[in-house]
Image (tube, rainbow, N blue to C red; front, side, top):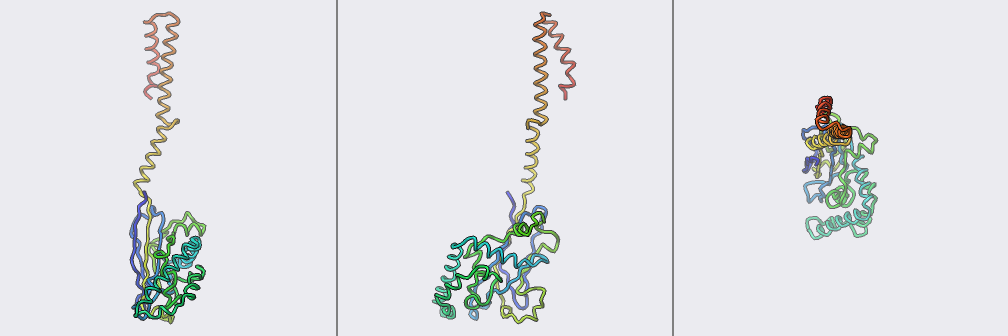
Amino acid sequence: MDHLVCLQGIAELSPANPEFTIDLPEANWQNLLDIRLQLSGVPCIPPVDHYYNPSGINVWFGTKNITQSVRTWIAEDLNKRGAVSRKQFADSVNSLRALWRKSVIAPQITHLSDADAKGLTDTKWSTFFSSLGDGKSGPAGVFHPFNFVFSRVSATPYSFRAALTKEGDPRKPVLSDQLDRRLVLTAVDRLIQVDRIPDLSLTRPVRINYSLELEYKDPFEEYVTAELAKLAELLGPTGPIQTALAQQASVTQTLKDELWQTALKSQGIPAAIDRLQKLLEDMRPELKS
């Protein structure tokens, strides 16, 4: 059975800390089979909540920006699920509308009419996931599906191994160098200086649920499998054990044939015994092997 290591928590991004780094645990990277990632925003209603909804989140794996790959993965997976994911999304939006409609502290949630809600939940997944969160899908972006995916809306975790295979390089290690051993979430592109971007999502902190699952080969299982393969080869029809048994059977048959021939020639029992002893002496090296 493969060995799994799970990391999960809530990442908080703010003007003071626009990056959140998740360091992967030290391990035998040669045995790493895959890394599976789940990300989802924490929905909120400002100004009632202290937080904003995530908007335009970037995902870095070491020095590589994998945001577009993650967005495409989620959109394609939700498309494959068809009506199931649509119903889950609509149910999630409507349940929050019903909950907040009863609350006097979040009156702006009622600004989304039933018709607008239906239009929102019928939007193409590829349109939604042109970014990981936005500020326009419902009040303050609260109804963007990024806030529900992997929790209220089922989806397949992003697979680093599958993504590498899709890129045409399935033999490439999941982790290729020291810099790749961390995952970084950012509120804006790290290649652009934060202080030059008037992004309202950075005026208050945003929160993102994350889950990482690292799958390793079990080295003991690999050892046992190799030893069993060796044993199977030893016991196989062309293995040394079967070959030795065949040789012993051949020697036994030769002795039987010689005894029979001696008896047929009527040379008597003593002569037959002497003949067998001579044969055994001649075959002694072969029997020892």
